[in-house]
Image (tube, rainbow, N blue to C red; front, side, top):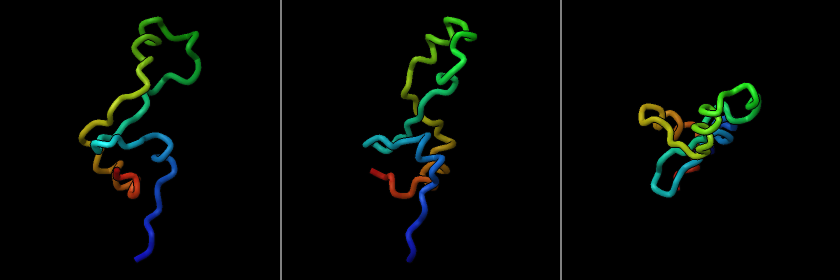
Length: 68
């Protein structure tokens, strides 16, 4: 059986926790922060969020060897 390939785009966006949850970084936090309101900047400070339950199955298929 050949090895499965990891999707590199998903590898950069998601990581798995020890309990099997999919962790992601919130969007809109990279650049153009001067144009955003203080509320947008403050609520976006949370770097670790969890992926929605409906997306977890697809993400785990993209990351076949990231099951801790």
